[in-house]
Length: 268
Image 1 (cartoon, rainbow, N blue to C red):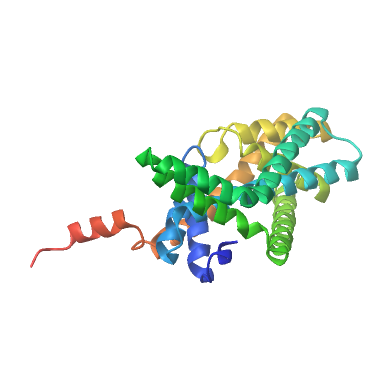
Image 2: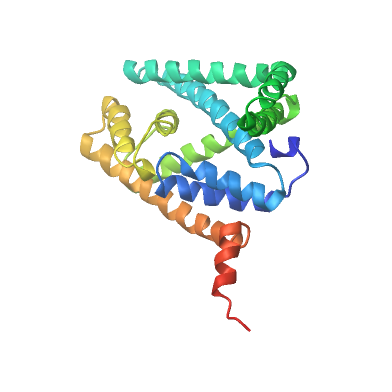
């Protein structure tokens, strides 16, 4: 998605994404998305508003994919929670509206820029807003390339399928038998719930979702809680290790870090 602006190396985006995941696990309000955007902007020279725009668009499309995965998994199993199905439908509707906004926003780019330019002559702050809006609309254009969009969808599906395999293996380690479709359904519910306001690391909300999903399929509350704790422990371990490496790899990228590094250097 970022390559829609200009060619960008893979490694910095990888480490920035891992550092952002670390921030999402330990900070509230998905602050990791801001961390990732700032890092990517610092290492690539791409504007922060463009990077953040692609991140927002990515989350919208990801929600749509998760809703589809959840609905298909529920259909394959032949049963499921009506409440979760309605929640998935609501989120899917929001994702569709967001996707339509992404698709239509650049068509109104000229008109919006004329409005901001006219306001900028009277309100100084409008000039700054105009620049941010221009970059945001440019970020939306990343999703207009069919090949890029198909690549995003394919990689997203592959990622969730591999996560479902890991979820089944964690269940086997606890002697809990999750079918592949149940694992997909659980991951879809967890993924959609991560968009709700929550504590750092989604503590509490993940437990609620696990009990709501697994108990109707024959698991006890104790088994559901044990499973999701093991799942979160595995996620925390992986994200902490790789996210920590990402922070170390990008330790000199941010202005604040460069400032503190200069302060720590001994004077001649």
